[in-house]
Length: 194
Ligand SMILES: [Zn+2]
Ligand SMILES: [Zn+2]
Image (cartoon, rainbow, N blue to C red; front, side, top):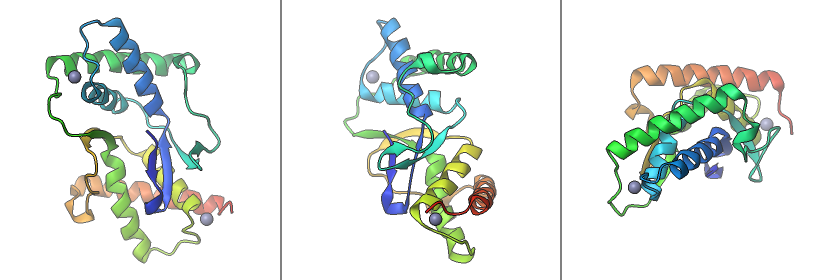
């Protein structure tokens, strides 16, 4: 479920996505009345992801740089594990009480925060001078900014287009700009790794 956005010049991934998959699987296995359809699974994962602190990493050829993917709940810190599990039980309750399955559209998990960042980043690059816009530097800008903002995961029909800057709520936009400017400073201080 990696966020592959190579056409946008960056490639990042939230390591909490694997955690969400694992905890949702765990609570669904315990509850025989839980729905296992893809829509309900993804709706639950989105709800879990929105209560977890994001942990974005840069991907290089599909593999995370500096950290590994989380493949088991056993390696999570206790606090994070309990937080994720509580989120999954709550998500299960919400989705069971109002399941959205039934329509045939193919859906995918999206972080709306990322959708807001993409056009904002492009807007900033139009007038802000920066040393390097290689895909690695842009990926690191995205990583820092996304880790600094609250995730807003939703399930949407596959192929939905990205938001435009003028469609983004002004309050959100201010935060997105601030996070991106902070991220640029961070990356410029580190310098390009290439
Ligand atoms: Zn379902
Ligand atoms: Zn660079």
